[in-house]
Length: 437
Image (spheres, rainbow, N blue to C red):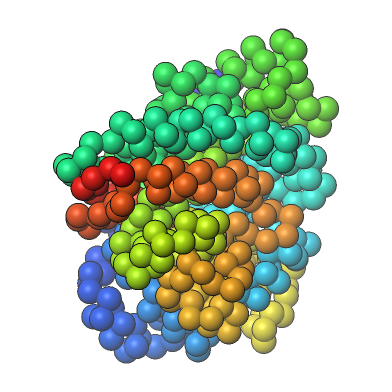
């Protein structure tokens, strides 16, 4: 088992952060630097730009001057950046010419396809469809209705246990706790070991040297523990009666029960990361966004009925997964550019969600937008996030319970962001709550 796992590591970024230039941390300085670059020199695939939250000027220029842009990166090689909302939708819905297939490189800019770890998001129809179908009952309206009171009970306990008048880390105390509890329930994983799921989610997409893991070898070691644990669960569930958890659904599904181990491992990575990162980082992002936009925080306090709209706006504003990648299966002329067979094509959701031609005042955080669900954070077409409604449900519940208890959650320091061109997340957000209602 370990040998199989060790061989299948292309899901992890294969580089160290030291190869990337450290950018200025001032957005004004970055904007001046980007304006002075020749357009062909604009390269957005630097995780340090995302870590310091200075990526916006790069995408602004690409949307304005070269929305289908080719760049050559020192780590990833050549890649196309798709930066406009409607162009992203066109690529996302054209799986015949733009493939998600793991053996071609999969869904991330750093995938090389040499040692693929298949998962249904990194598959094309028809195999994608049957594997996705196997797990969709977990997020059916009926099951979400069943989960809602449990999520609310847990959210209430988490919030009631928070300290008052002292600084604490919102990521650790709230965002991780709620999402880890929910994810453990979806897997029927022991709640007392739920933080393992968080750790494996962090490791799965971590950059060596970025504060989560130090080396590629550490990635293999920690993910081997993850895969061994879930393989044992698979065998146990396969021998028992069909259940309502994700592992049982895969182990008993007619089209998935005979999947090879590395394919199951890939789907475990997908379900852990997908079930954790989107919700966890948007819960943190919502607190940060409201603090950075105090007029919107006041609006929410005055009108709690705006919570669903605020949740959708935060998902757009945060864009918890910055990109998805496709590989061209043939030569394609797209918006006047010739994309060659085998080229990497990167859909920058973070840029599409700031497209001025589609979204009014896209750089502003407005919780009562006319069309708050008009965003591309969940993807589009057949690969649209299977758990999007569950993510929205958790976000809505946590904020309903927050407004019952606290007048304000105050951010008291700078957020610590992850090093990644893929996950737009937070490792830490210092906050303080001054009083309870």
